[in-house]
Figure 1: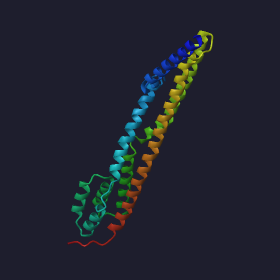
Figure 2 (figure 1 turned 180 degrees about the vertical axis):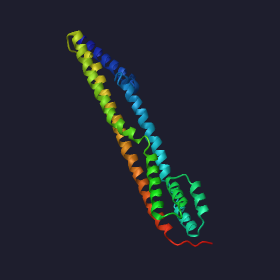
Figure 3 (figure 1 turned 90 degrees about the horizontal axis):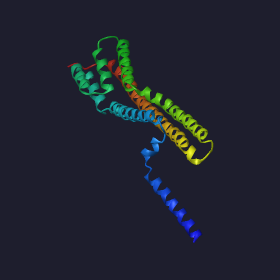
Figure 4 (figure 1 turned 180 degrees about the horizontal axis):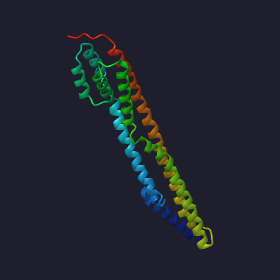
Length: 229
């Protein structure tokens, strides 16, 4: 009977442990990371916001109507400068603003027009890169916060041991939770920010290539003879 009672007690203890594990949700687990989790949560929210916001802006900037440049070309060759300007103003894209700046300079030396167009292109790229550097900063400091949490967790472990003057799982569990959760959270936030930073920069590089190609095409275009009507 004693053996059966021991088995029954062990089973009950195991069931209780399983039930306790089932009630420990993700939020409870994260909260065991201690105070370091608060700045990490803030950094994660900022990271997600910047990635989504910049992705939307850059995606819109990269969308170009295939017939847009063709229409501009026909209008300029026919001498319809005002119509070309109106078309550029009606399209809210970096390429349209670049062409608008160039068309406004028509009649001036080609070098001056080329310089104005190139400066406009640089300004448009700068607008797309707005706040993007913050992702690079977060990618660097988020793992550092995780490391701070690791140090804090180790300190807590040794402090609890010094108070109790013995070593047990119960004493070191809290510190281990804080150490491991903050380290993992810091790495996850840093990795997401790092990936987002480089992916968005790749998107900006594609837009930059489009602007450079448009600049070359426009400079070649304005040097062709027009068919004024």
